[in-house]
Every structure is written in structure tokens, then in C-alpha cells.
Image (cartoon, rainbow, N blue to C red; front, side, top):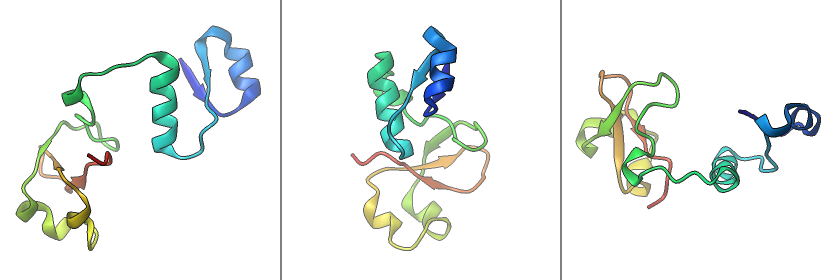
Length: 95
């Protein structure tokens, strides 16, 4: 499956292509989910790191306090961390 914002590439890919109109990553994700009729289980969202594909797990605020941007802890309802001890990360979805 080819995901693209390029009209010509999407046309060339025909049934194997998905033309995206959104510019922002979060909006593109929502567009792909809607266009392809995806419905992953709620606990499957962000189960792996987007950078290194390492499984993530819930993290306590005290464990990631020094590894997230200032003010980020106040904005996030849930925190995720990488299971191999790499840098902590905030969950992207607003709950």
C-alpha cells in the first residue's frame, strides 16, 4: 500500500495507492484510518515507538519527568516509555 500526497503517484499505484489530502501527521493518520476502514483495538494504539519500533509501556510521571519538554506533564493524561530504557515519550493522542 502506497500512502502519498502526490496525485500522480497515487494514480500510478491505482488500487495499491491511497491519496492523502491532510498535511499534519495526526490528520493524515485519521484520514488513513477513515479511508481504509481501520479499527485497531484501543490498547493497540502506540504500542511501539514510532522511531525505533521498540515496544512501549506505561510510565510513571516521576520516571520521565526529566526527559519530557517543560509543561508536557501537565498536558498528558497518560505517559508511555520505551521498555529498553531509552528516552521516555508522551502519548500523542489527547484523551
